[in-house]
Amino acid sequence: MSFASMERSVAAARPGWRHRVLHFLVVAGPGLIVMVADNDAGAVSTYTQAGAQYGTSLLWVLLLLLPVTYFVQEMVARLGIATGQGHAAMIYQRFGKWWGRFSLVDLLLLNFLTLVTEFAAIALAARHLGLTPSVVVPLAAVGLILLVGTGSYRRWERMTLLLCGLNLAWFGLAALVRPDWGSAAMDSVLPNVPPGGVSGDFVFLVIAMVGTTIAPWQLFFQQSCVADKRLRFADLKLARLDTLVGAVAVVAFAGCMLLVGDAMHRNGLSYQDPAQMAGALTPLIGIVGSKLILLLMCNAALLGATAISLSSAWAWGEVMGWRNTLEARISQAPHFYAAYALCVAAAAGLVLVPGAPLQVIILGVQVLAGVMLPSAIVFLQLLLNDRAMLGERFANRRWNNWVNWTVIAALFALSLVLAAQVIAPTLFSAAI
Amino acid sequence: MSDTTFTPDLLRVIHPLDDAPEQKLYHADLGSMQMTASVRFSLVLLRCYLAGMVMLVGWRVLSGL
Image 1 (cartoon, helix red, strand yellow):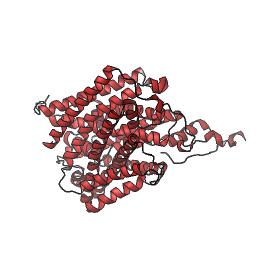
Image 2: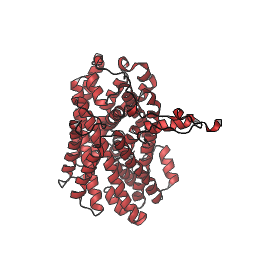
Image 3: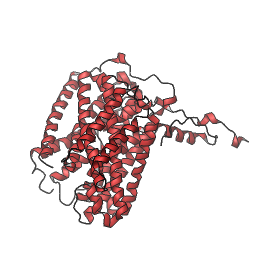
Image 4: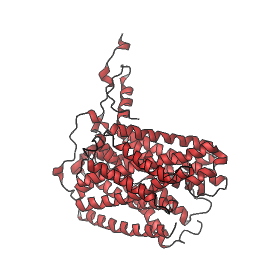
């Protein structure tokens, strides 16, 4: 992890690797945070639902998404280091005001809806923990605002990495539900369709998994984060490693969530949402395990909320020309912090209005993210081929373009399948 | 003696926020990207596609998953 203002001098013994480790610890942060924060409340819900409905059959989708998410985020990190600018700023500057504002509005809308789901998850978990949502949700909102308002990027990064580290508990939970490791390993590497065949719900869930693993806010967040941290050209290799470690971590944690959901499937329990699942699994994992699921759900929501709100505030600031850095005190960047606080407070306030169907909103948002992602990646692809700006060193190589166009084509294909499913719901009803 | 030589600078790592800012590749003079007509057309089509998809997803979500 990045251990803050690390200007360290240590006794020299084989300085090569120690220097590289220290350098990595200094550079690491944006890649790891963006990836682990991607396993937000919606992701917990989507992955556990995938496990509860289809057992371990969909583990291969996660493994397939690992290189995809790495390649996409690596490009963002490279663009951020090369330009020192956020993603919204780049779209605004290179594609003009109209495209810049259009992308910003897209991002703010999707981010806001996603934020609502984060707070809804906190409210749900609080209720199951025996706490009062009308107290816990405002407290969470205040905590999230205080987290960024310290005037120190490094302080925010340290605290956020601590929240990321709490996700390690998912490994313990996955072990606790005693999965069939052999079957899980096979399903991870061998693509297969669940026994019920390709149904509309199956297609919808696969698209939701893609949408939650690679989300538009991640592109904006990591590039702005890299720019705010002022990563240098010399940091590129380690920023890539940071992103790779994050990609492995996010898929590993997601796999654990799916295994926990699989326990519902194996025991014939019906699934409604992660909080209900925590209660249903109590005989298997004990009361401590059950409470741990609820706490991890809150943690996922908090982590997602700070990253998503920051991506909104950074992007908003970039387009409007506000000062937008976590290194500034609130009085020095009032618009930036106000935008962040507005996102958090509005989403938290909306959740306290009763009656929202949580599971529908969560899955719908993930699907919406999957649908909107092709647009964001097309812009990314065009920017990474902007040789007039990036030169040969930072622009995409030929193989980068092949990989990216393949990803874009796959995302479009999934979106078209979704459209077909919406237009003709019976299209996939027959088992294949 | 050589095993215990203290050479602090060899392991000195400066945090980017403490380092001097470097000249990045983007500068305001670059202006807008030069786009071919086909790229511009593709972007317009992309937006139309997205608008349609958003409406479809909205309809699906509202009608219940």
